[in-house]
Length: 73
View 1 (cartoon, one colour):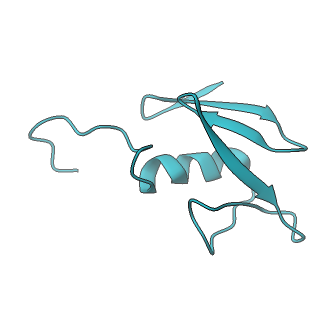
View 2: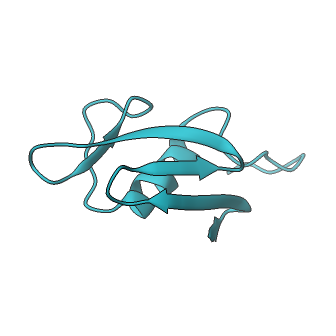
């Protein structure tokens, strides 16, 4: 288990990628170039599952951390 921006990332199996971010399952594919990808971020590939999960948290609504009132970033 890894925490990133307050979100819990659980990588259950690296061979057949099974991942959850705060309990939400993420479908991850391992492509012929030995890189990981997900439907949440089309046309983007990653060398590691953890980097993919961090990018989902940073860029996909519903996974992003909630902003604190008055916060600009």
